[in-house]
Image (cartoon, rainbow, N blue to C red):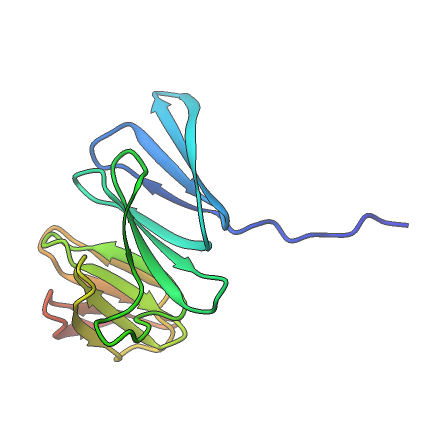
Amino acid sequence: MSAPEFPEPEVHLASSPNLPLIYAIFPDRIRQIHVDGVILKKSGFIKSPGECRAMVVNIFDGKAVALKMPEGYGQVTLLTPGGNLQMEIFENDNEEALFIQPEALVVTRKLVIVVADIAQQAVKGVTPESEVVFTYRGIRSPTALMCDEQNFIYIAGPNNVHQLTENRELVKFF
């Protein structure tokens, strides 16, 4: 009789741009790891109310975490540098869900939170006040995001990458 096989939980990594910290993002928690050269030390964790899908750390060491909640909607949780809850972004002023299955996120230099929602086949830019500043539907199955120093947003899908201006205008795809 062989032992049952269980899939390993998906793990993502994020790093602090200013502090010697990396974060291992597990489905149910975020592990903070202090980096000192080749020495790594666990230095705490943040328990998650939903399934962690992605995380990004901004230049102020604030954290944005994309979650898939048990109730079936998506949420972006903003955390302080210390890991405490600052804000939850999940619905607009009309109480409509903003996200269903957030898969990736990035924060622009103007602090717009850009979220790839694979279930909605869209990328949305939202402010911390839950205001949607743009929705981009030009790519199928958006799964990865990046923002460069010039504030261009890059969206990866199954077969290509789209480059957008910070105002969601398509520059090119390749």
